[in-house]
Image (cartoon, rainbow over all chains, first blue to last red; front, side, top):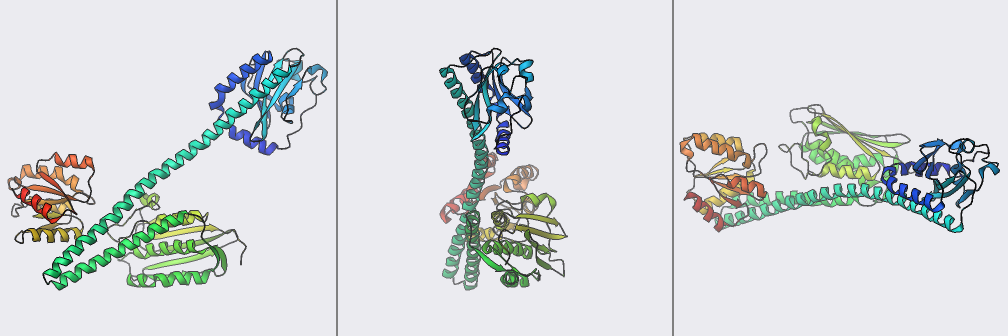
Length: 404
Length: 126
């Protein structure tokens, strides 16, 4: 007996076979029918769909044989998958590879074997084979039909695999669509109500002007400006949320000290107003990165940390630290602010979540923008927070470019 | 008149409009459903019309309606109270639930014009 060598594409072949394993149940019925047809066409008592895995051949469908699998070492199919053509052994007794094979000398007493390789995504996973207890050969028509049936087995498998992929995509798209619907609803509401509010304040201010109530008119116009600022903040965040999900932004060499200084300058005024000290902790150096995203991540995290500082605490601070090693850049934004209860941690990155509605207003989009930028940079973000203990966000971004 | 709305802006704008409809209206404000309940239970204050915001945190305008029904049964001075639901948007199910209470007279859009508001207020005043 001569054992079949491993296929040259063994690793990839086994990977494709493993992926087919998930659709085995789905194709079982049609494979059984095709196998039965193969036996009838070839006029053999046995026909099988036999898949060759690492250690054995497994019968995914069988006709005339009540065995689940046999060791790969003795498998005829292990030979058949080495070539793309029909593999035929007219008489196993006369073949040096098989004459003393236990499947030949014992049950199921294979004398004749014809196996058409099943090539799924370019790799022969197994065969559709016909087996007889007597030596014989197939007619040209039988060979053609067996090959055609094998290609039908492959078609069933590939179809089931495609279906499975589509189901996954469908599921993802359904989730995205539902999110988009919620988003659109909220956007239209969140844009409409302040605009209507501005109009009503404007009407009221006009009445004040007619009544010569100058102070009241001034207060109402001031309110219109405030609401206008909120609306433009919302529009800016919406635009950013959209662009955060889209393609790449330019990558540029970024000096980390400069980056931190820029963030500190941008938030100096609001931090001052809230009595919050900004503490910077740079690791120096520079790297090539989509700088726009990095800035936005930092900006939203710092702005939140300032916004949700704890007014009852005297030493309010926000610490921005950068650390990096060979693999990644770690950005940490920590504060001793109000903190976030554990139950709300999961909702942080959802759109329009404002956790401290009584304390601060905002668009409710900041953290989902951060989430999207982090995802676009293939990074991760984690959160440690406890009410009264402050909050710490850590963003880890893998470094791919060369270090500069 | 009692204005129940958690947003100061809304209370201010409604107060201004009511004054424009009739400068002699006595107007009280409540920033939450709980505050509204307290004020209404006090028989020293008499209200003809309550403007009730639908969307409020903690106890919404919708949640307040059954409590109001209960209050009316226990307090004779609330027998003629009329409620106007004051909102920028309402779910159809909420609208139906609100209409089930006979003291809910109408739904008023926060953005409706002065004339339609005048008509609703006058109707509610009977």
